[in-house]
Amino acid sequence: MKRITASGLALSISATALLAACGGSQPPIGAPGAMEQTLQAVRSYQVLYSFGHNADDGRDPHDRLTNIGGTLYGTTVFGGKRRCSAGYNCGTVFSITTGGTETVLYSFKTENDGANPEAALIDVAGTLYGTTYSGAYGFGTVFSITTGGTEKVLHSFGNGTDARNPAASLIEVKGTLYGTTEFGGKHNRGTIFSITTSGYERVLHSSTGGSDGANPARALVDVNGTLYGTTNRGGAHTCGRYRCGTVFSITTGGTEKVLHNFNGTDGQGPDAGLLDVNGTLYGTTSKGGAYTCGGITCGTVFSITTGGAQKVLHSFNGTDGEDPAAGLLNVSGALYGTTYLGGEHTCAGITCGTVFRITTRGAEKVLHSFAGGSDGALPLAGLIKANGSLYGTTSGGGGGSGCSGNGCGTVFSISP
Image (cartoon, one colour):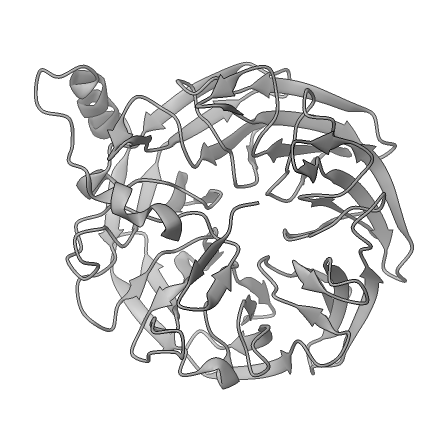
């Protein structure tokens, strides 16, 4: 799990710490990788929108988009009209057409109405629900917003032993919303919570930080009424300074069970939720696996049964991706994802990230290597499918000029 503290604002986001790396230019004609990059762009990849074109625009999208009737909706961690107490603008909710017309639907005003939304939105009967990392007590909110931009805070986290700092999107099960928080609870090691659409919130499980895991910071998945998720730390094994993380199940009543303890070789530090494909779960770990990238292991794609039988499908090696920080997408039996780092191109000393495809048997292929600059860089978000194409965001790069040359992020499309 990656951290940044900027003027007192702590977020579970890695891209901001490396924003200066996102302003690199495309490789020159004739340079290694330039021809392949050009062919990829012609064949399938297109930047639809670059954030940072004006002072009110969003900045730094960190999670997947949501498709409602062919219009895509998302959040940006920073940007918008209002400046929060830490010195950064408070973030936005935006919409964008598949043709690239972007509209800011809502600019968060202060911590009281929420600030710094890291997570994706979910659609429940035409209303969008989301979370912000900061809020009235400084520890985040759950909010609703209409597609026309009317926002309402349903719950502010952080009062007493309440949950704190949600960094993940919600899921809806039989009319109730379920989510995770990175911190808070009885032990301040994170929680799993439920909340009604009217705002009644309940902590279902408080992580101890030990054998039951710690920092469940990503979205849950519902499989036949049981919820499954990951913890970035905790568990039975130690990887360097921290424990390696877990996969767990939890009932909607709050009974939690650890299904798998990562040990480093089979993955470490899952920083994404799971994907259900016909009863088997698929996920990524941001570290661990067979290969090392710059002194740390590069990350994996894995499968796990609901009974806990885990298998590494692919170990990234840097060239084919590094640090997969987002979940996977199933398209006709093939899995698609992004890696925050890795690939062919370098952005101010770090690799710029990739889009990849992998079969359920583990055959992986890089579909696009980000090149920085107007091409985008450092994707933290997973992909969605709409109108036959895949859509995603990058946390850095882009052609906007509103981020002191660092790049404010992009929305892109790519053919599957």
